Image (spheres, rainbow, N blue to C red):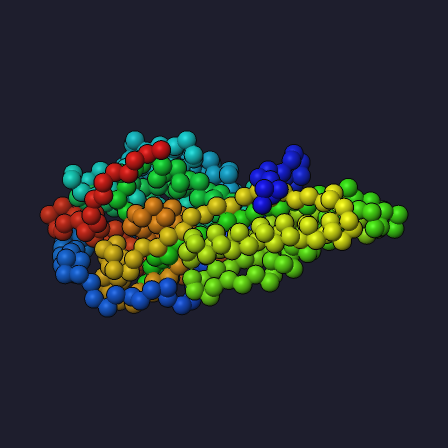
Length: 461
């Protein structure tokens, strides 16, 4: 595989990458859209006594009931934050304007020391009373939609319609609401809450924001991510993925005059696609691949000098992903060799560049963080479904740090489409449910002890 070089020269790489971004946008998916219909693990039928006791105490405490009432009362104002943030476009790698608006809201609602880090994430720390865990609570700033998309919020049929309004702007507005009511009701958590609005979750962002967060903050003990997931859904599996941009290059020539003397870049790519299509992958852990983009050539009567494709490889475990990736890259090499042999030449070459790298992992179903979500869901009358997707939580999962992704309320649909919508009717129920999950993990002063254990700080690189 030595000939599969790790770079693509100049304008060829940039042009192919631009095509890949568009083609892979839909493939990236949202948490709700990607979540498998079937459970990836059995939901615990019982939780440990400490978890049950903590949530019994929380749900009975007058201060917590008053806090949840405040979440309901803040709903309409929170929807105004939703509208405001949605109408600030946030394409991948261009999240700054929305980040600045979110930062201003964090500061106005009680975190004057909040900041934007070097990667572009917005970070605000609400300190606990001390000696508790540090829980990351996050949502992502970016959407899949390019600059210039009409992101104005339109209301019809009882729903709010706008690109990105549910994925993931609703979660951003809910975090702001939580901060507001926690401060106004003077509820002190035992553990710290690290509020983060991340960049790079969508498309080819490769989770760059969340990677930076965990690289720079080795003292995070757990993560609760917010995405447009349905009531009771808890994402505990992070599907890993690698994406490659592959470019085939040859001398090219006239379809008649050069026939038999030069190889075709398109034919070589076609051979590669055929070989890739025949690769066998395990059904469990689920492992998939696709050639999601293919293009090349200059005219119908030209032997193509150049062709490009983008390959997406995913798996619920890293081992099968790496094995499938190895087979894909070998198939590409074999295809180029076959095309050269066909014409007894060696003038067709290929280069590959890794353009997508999302680590994977899994939070065990019997971990405290999962049981906390299960118990909170039960308190709000929901059965829990443990499922998987590719989200910001992939990063902590890959590091062995407890992490889950849950919903924050509202009925949603049309993810990654211009027709995306959300129905916020009674969506405060979901915001309450998710907040109680968080409170159970960090504990509330005078009510409950933290459930999330503290971890030894990780070494930074």
